[in-house]
Length: 524
Figure 1 (cartoon, rainbow, N blue to C red):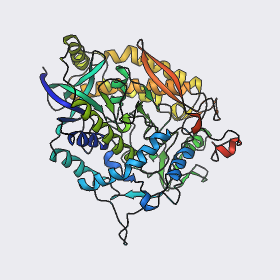
Figure 2 (figure 1 turned 30 degrees about the vertical axis):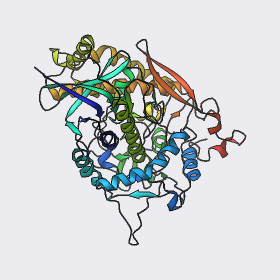
Figure 3 (figure 1 turned 90 degrees about the vertical axis):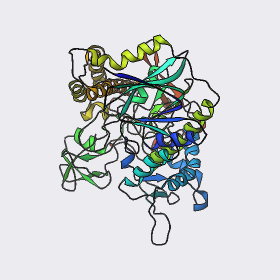
């Protein structure tokens, strides 16, 4: 039997990675009560421990805003939101200074200058500050600094549902995975920083606790979701437990160099019958981050620069916030961490200022009964399907390269039909025998929702662009698809629609196609 615990706070932050820590710290600096909840461990959650660069824009170092924005536009194939690109770059130096003041050490060369990491076609004006290269530089400061300034921290607690009444968010409910405690958290404002979402592939990129929890919670209360059709493309070693760096030449079965591991080249080689692929003496696979999108573009659409979700009292940051800083593929090293710190700081400050003038809602009994039932339902079933089995089934349908990597309408629709069956006939029958399985049950449910979003968005965008490739629509379609795909829950169903990109951000349509896009897909 779960023991119920009620916590009242001004600002609730869900997620213990870079964005969540910045949101909590900046909210606390406004003088309000802040509670930070992580289903993992603060500073070690999600992808944060593996991050090793952060983009730092500073005009005093000779950086030019037009150069950096142009790189995002051209590499992101004109899908980036230029307003957000400039905003993140302008914020990046202050967030860099914050990290240093918290105790994060960045490497310097023998002359005392910060070391530069330039990849993905970075121009000479770009500079990326590099820390110790292992990811360890983040962990201790991110854990210690929020505690030092008085942030209340709950770890190993999974938030499952937002408490939603009178068309506003009144907090959230979750449970402890290391004991039978049910947490009802009343909050004047809530910030979702729970990371992106993947399908838990073996080996490679560490996304084992990223299951789109924040995306799904926000979607359920009416927030707009975007960025789901574009695939992350990290490459990893085929042998479980080993990793392969994303950079360095990849060769096909015929010994030909086919790419550097950061795109669709390996998938095209497999599709052409020239697998297996190798990097040195390691056999590699391309879908180690399967089910995720490009950093900075996936998640809840922010309606302003305060990272407000459009749902009263709900804010988002990090990979829960679809800023579209990068675009249809990575724009450069360090964009993800710079965006996480900047959006976390903006959301935390705005949420705290709002909360300081707000009163806690009196929680509605019917709403509390609903969220309790939603959390505990898998534990109340005597039998059904295990979350591990449903997850395995979902992976079997989605992980082949020819579903979400090299796509076609027929295959996407076939996969969607199976996912709809899982959603309607299997997910309602998932059962759990302990808190650990209860976590898996809710993660599986969220992964299924994420899968449906990704398949529907991929079907909806009838063109190829960036890491979204459709065999049946192999070219980019300007200006018809110079638009962001939006997903919103209406009448219990997913509604998809376009949000046009401002025309002043379009490429020059008078130029020939191969000049607008100098790096075409293979075969174009």
